[in-house]
Image (cartoon, rainbow, N blue to C red):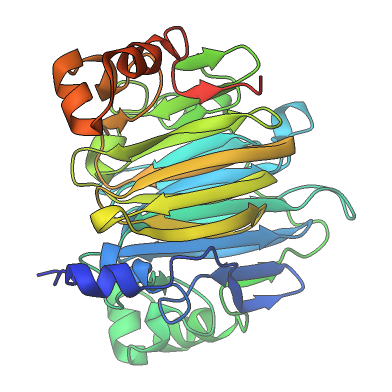
Amino acid sequence: MVQRSSNAEVMSMDLSPKKPAKAYGSDGGSYYDWSPAELAMLGVASIGAAKLHLNAGGLSLPSYSDSAKVAYVLQGAGILRNLAGICGLVLQEAAKEKVIPVKTGDTLALPFGAATWWHNAAEAGDTELVVLFLGDISKGHTPGRFTNFQLTGATGIFTGFSTEFVARAWDLDQDSAASLVSTQPGTGIIKIAAGHRMPEPRAEDREGMVLNCLEAPLDVDINGGGRVVVLNTANLPLVKEVGLGADLVRIDGHSMCSPGFSCDSAYQVTYIVRGSGRVQVVGINGTRVLETRVEAGCLFIVPRFFVISKIADETGLEWFSIITTPNPIFSHLAGRTSVWKAISPAVLEASFNTTPEMEKMFRSKRLDSEIFFAPS
């Protein structure tokens, strides 16, 4: 059972954005993750966060995780049109793997028990394949951190079994079993030998498995303000099994994202994809608990019911978030859909201790603005 931190503990936590540290790697690429020792909210929210960087020819060996995840392709293109990224995916009880061509903007929901491998089939010197993983680790082994179980390699599951058990499981003689388990010295990530043919990706395997957030219909589109694509059970059904919602938000230069909060007791985990800007978060008793600048590559977590707002710098700001519920609901405190527009004038006057004239002026603002406000 997940233990919740007290209000005082959450209010005193360092919520500032952090970048990941390298966990392991080889000439095929590297795996980075965020540590709850550096970002305490990972443990509080029972969230894991990691990034995979694969160089040309790199292969992330087959593995499964102790957590359900959402994977977002930050960089890469697929072989079917010079697209170089491939995800091999085997769902529970599936008779055949899916070999999915992936590209920048793709989002995949990876349920419990799914086995995956990732490959960058690009030519030498071409684009890295970079994938962000965010997930729920409430049932995981390590608070605030994914635990990945490798199926092969120097730390693979079968290196822990005796030769007798491996031979019996795979119906091999003991010499063959010992050889098969020990001949891969790599750990986690390797580089494919020149000339080795990998499986061809299949466009049809994307069906129902992938949503490209850069190509999907926009859920919000405000001219000069920003755009949102929401990932939920309607456009990617596997999200229900993962138990997480997600969105990709892009706001234009100097635009503002309305102050708002998740009103269904969810945590919001935000990774800055590109651009930079300013962030403020306000918590209990009107206390500003975070005021900082954010830039590409950093991640932060907003506690439940805390209110957040962002303002982009000149180049704009783009972020990918997961929300710890599959169909998130947000409440905004400014704009046309704000709660203020629904509250009675007399209540507003009394609550703000202001005049009817000031209340009317306040109510008359942002009548046509949704959740993003372009610079005036």
